[in-house]
Image (cartoon, rainbow, N blue to C red; front, side, top):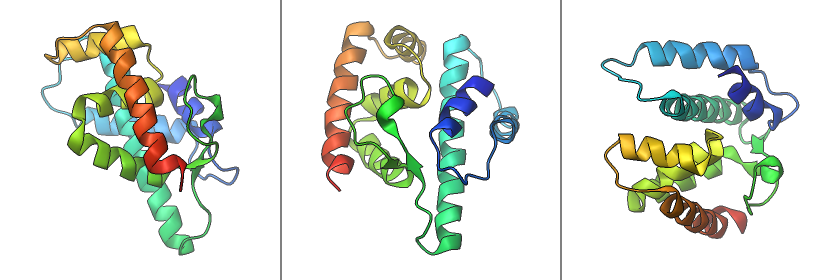
Length: 160
């Protein structure tokens, strides 16, 4: 989890006040509050932790922006993410808003984005998590979902 947190924070603004250890601790506390969770695999745990970290960072960004009244834009440079043709220095709040809209229309594909991009998992691990969740899939459909999702997100966020 610490490596995942460091990966997230490495791409944040230089004056970011949240440290990797604090992000891991906050994530762990939120995961402790989850009742009746059966961890299917390491990939499943990482996928859930990635989702929790994403929400923590987005909440932190919203709070920061609210405090600054629009200043200090919270950016996520996507240049270091593998195979993501989205613009560099993408605003994390805008990305989250786009993902929320995307989730309403394409819930499975949104989960793929969350696990691949935010969780740093491989397409095989994502397929494993989806199968454990009752979705019949394999690595190939996950790759197609990822390609479709990148194009949709680029259209929604990349041109603004």
